Length: 217
Image 1 (spheres, rainbow, N blue to C red):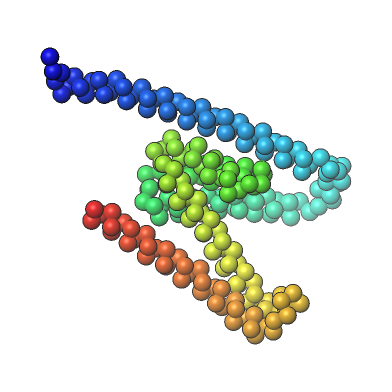
Image 2: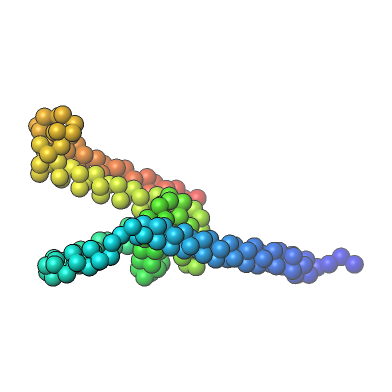
């Protein structure tokens, strides 16, 4: 006797859903293993970097340092790490995932940058850490790849802007290195200052075009 459509659907669910569940379980287990491996590598890299440090000399320097300078340094460190979270927030807004809360973006950004730079393989470790966190909010591999690309782009555009402003302020500071006259350096700095805005505008145009294409399809 031929099975009805609902019965066939039950059979398909019985076959497909366990496979999906098993795949999800394996991916979660792989994520745990990757997280432990990253943590071990981070601890190894940190202990290797700190093994030759004279802690007595460090404490002596801190003891003689100005308390106001130390407080200012701590504030600047907090601001620096806080600004890192804005990279992910901007990337999430760009790809249209405004539903991801700031606390998740801040956690993904902070942990990915700190662990990846501690281990030393930023381009490989950072996406893994981000995917581990963002996957719980429904973001896929492509979404995380876009976030990593946009965050890196924003970072380097910021570096170009800082470099351009520095050269505009002191165009002769780099002359002993590049042997370029200060007026020419100033022109190059102005060009560098415009480059991030041109790239950002072009990227926004591409994003808007992709959104329009998705809306039409």
